[in-house]
Length: 131
Image (cartoon, rainbow, N blue to C red; front, side):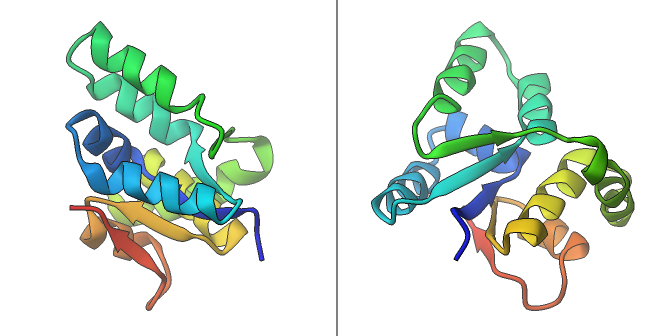
């Protein structure tokens, strides 16, 4: 079993800022298992790009310091696969990176956009709808 239980995409991060309690609940459930939630760097960058003000930016910065969160870089070994996966969602690299991480760690994909996530993941992959 992988140390990464779930992956948050950019929509999950922005849902957290909007007060979506399912995001926090999932973080706590994963922590109770002694595991972590991955936050791909491309998703964090996309979430930062969408914030309305510095308060939301500060909340994102605080969220990723939580002990159950693991920020994962988009390193050279992942770039090609993330880009290929992103083609299924009009080139959205954040979806491609999140899918790449989910596949690598065999983790649940947590999102408020499950239809988009289904385009980048294999059929019957575990997609947690946080909406």
